[in-house]
Image (cartoon, rainbow, N blue to C red; front, top):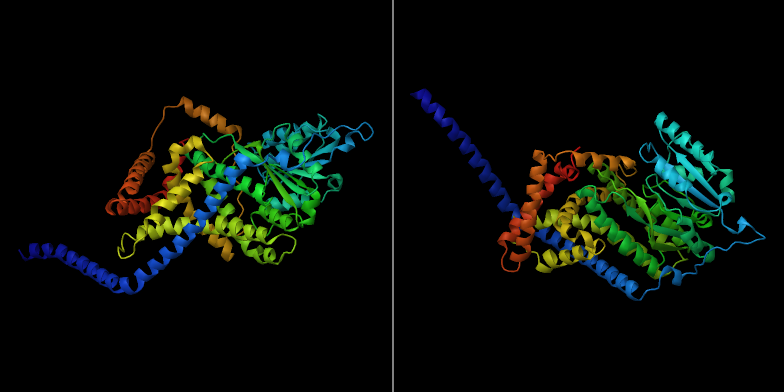
Length: 533
């Protein structure tokens, strides 16, 4: 009997210990809540609201400008002189500028034939173009395949050069810089750059080069990206929504107002004189393209963005590849901002308004504030107010401004408006990685110069899609959880937007569940955006 009574007392002991721990936690929480947690959270809300207003003003400004540009703005052919390059009987083909086409690549088994074929297919006088393949591949088999492909095109009469180097110092920037050192480059006037998954149309040079020929103040022509695999999976649709806004609004506004925007690293034509005057390629950050663009702009060169000139390319179709790409795209600009802010301030060749545009709008708001505020405010501060009811967030900061920013962002991809809720959740998940990368760039912490080449699939994408079409769809348990999570998220978004007008209960539940969804997706379930193999 004593034995049985001793057994029954064990759960009671555990329950008592559990109650003691709970009481101690609640006691500590009650002691630090008022003097510490509440003031800190109010400060965080205040700072986040300021950053939200900055983002909102920036989006509204760009929205107004792009509207005016579309309604009343002049087309590039009207703002700058453009006319076809005319043949000259006396000069012959020498009246055409000498164009160097650079294709940097690294172990690009799936796409090397596509990119080399597209570059060699560019329509231009054959004695006025050089195709330069910069192969940094470490796989001997792939290097041999790329070399054989170059030899095949050379046998057809194409002036193509296959260049390799002993190391990968500087990654892409190092390869491009090394490529400019060859003796045959000295005779070139312009350089067109295409990443390994980009496929320009044959008339690309005929449509872009005349701007540089007739307008000596222009240093760069940037084309728009056209995504060939945007419909492959949900994740590529989300990427399309973000990038379409960048090309439809950000690049167009920069080109129309200050003749400045960030070079996208590919699908562009540089005047070699502008490139050299800016100091050439530098590998001090992972955004060598943006680095070069800022330095060239500070030298007084103007840039032109052609929205109607599109180059086909591929979006990352795996979460791993996309995450590495976003780390590079978020860390690099923040690190470049740290390195160049004083140089921009001291520059005397550009106007004060252009300096403000580059420092405040281009770098600070878009590359720093946007990433940090999206994560801190929407994924930490707002859910934290559920636990601290003493801290309130005004409706305009919690609902109206985020909603308007989201709608303004959606104008770039009207066909995906029905996916807006999914895009919001996906962007909240990615905000963790982008905010972390931004802080790494600002502090120059570890991984600041990490460079992992984005995986490309090329024709394998079409093959994979065709193969999957023949298979019966299968849903793994993770897919079911993910779909359920997104369905609940959609319901809560609707409830939150409605109930915030009349009460806080459902809205707080929405914020809390969104935070939970964020952590679940961030640590594993985002991979289910990609169709199963």
